[in-house]
Amino acid sequence: MAAPAVWLFLVITQAANSPLPPSPSTVLLVLINTVTLSLFLTRRAAKVEPGKVDMTLALLGTFIVAFLRGNAIEGTSIVPAAIQIYALIGWGLSLASLGRSFGLAPADRGLVRTGAYRLVRHPIYAFELLFFVGYLLQVTTLHTVVILSAWAILQVIRILREESVIDGYGEYREQTKWRLIPGVW
Image 1 (spheres, helix red, strand yellow):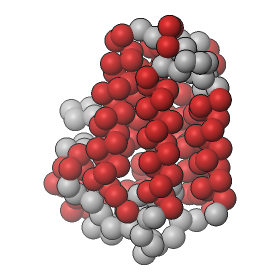
Image 2: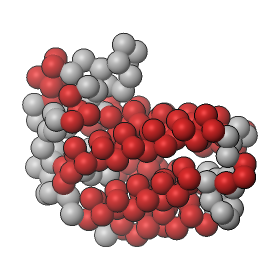
Image 3: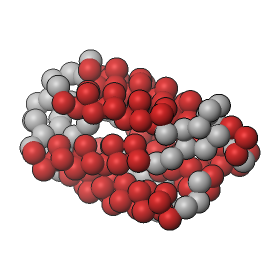
């Protein structure tokens, strides 16, 4: 039950670290993390439970972004905000496709191949990446670069570990070639 408490901390921290009035992307980020928390609480049981290393990586990779500092609505630039809003919509649709198979750490809760999962194998991570590219364009500081670099490294490790746990992944890998970005990786 520690993960939901930490997730709630993330949502509260994201809201508290943003000046008022918050930017639209900050509001949507808090909203999507609230939805994600709900999916986490209603997820189906895993066939294979994650180990301590996987859980630690997942917690770090998910919650390190709580240390980002948002911007006020008057400091919002249109292009980064548009990127973030597009990414949040894709992120939400990917979460909807995943549904109750959502989990925090690598575990086998069933392989999803529908929705965004037909295009790339890890669409939630892909849209998170796009969101944080927009964030970095909006809040270009050394603090942001350090946090997002650590986040990106942790996500790559999580992706590789997830792919080794889920039953039927080899066939899925052949059907859906790209992990995050079609034509790249």
